[in-house]
Image (cartoon, rainbow, N blue to C red; front, side, top):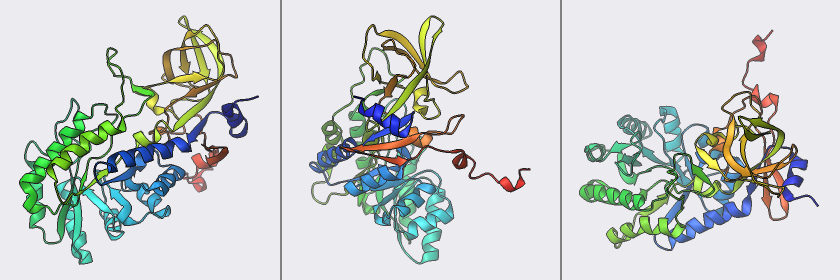
Length: 405
């Protein structure tokens, strides 16, 4: 009897991404219930993490808003039927025409820079309306603060911007947004971030009609450890309740009566563990004395291999377990999926399962030498295609064939 993964490969080919729909939904329900038990919270799924339409729509059906960056993500949200009131817009670049359409559609916009605020005011004047916005801020939290985005708190820039907005007649500040990073395993960093937001609000509350506080995402996933993690530290992902306590406790302490809504923008937490990659061994080599496998999945479809160590398991059990390097099929030396993993004595044709492949693999992948593979969904006894394997016609669709002679 063949395993479910062997059956999937026979039907859809290898390599193959597999979505566990039940796990995807359970991750959302866990996050939603844990936070709302402590504080009124909206979950907005971060499209850039994995913008496969089926995944986005599944999470919307569960109750998620959309967190998008201007461009095709906005077009995708509209195509999926998401109303503007359920879309959060972030990002450092919002062209005027796109920003105008976003505002006309009724989305919630967190502005990133002073030029955007001026654009919002110009558009509001053209439309004859008053526009409500949030501002993104940054501050030194942890060792690697995200300082590229928004207005800095320490140097007083955020306070100055709040006073600037207050002087505008057609722009009202109603939200404060802060995203402190990704794959964060220390909940205290979120407590620090909320504390900074609260103190900024407290000294400017006469100029802010606060309706929401947005703390972004960054919650970590298990099973794929960042390569720069110190060897003496165990990668221990906090529970959802630990994240919730860290964020909600200071909010409840400060806001006693009227509570602004808390917005979260998770991506990795929701989808990373819900997708795995099946790949087949195509050859076995001895490279510098190390047993090395060549598989049919490369770094073009698993770009996080450059900065994360994925857990790899195999369909065929056996001993002894041998120190092994796993290479992809691409014609480039850097096509190394994992180095120094212990696997059984595998042969060509055997299957490997690379876990925790939901975050940024599809959205940052590319068609280099090998096209991107299919994605299937497993939902109980149902197994169905949600993205077919790419063909040459997909790769060359934007080329002008009329000038090729």
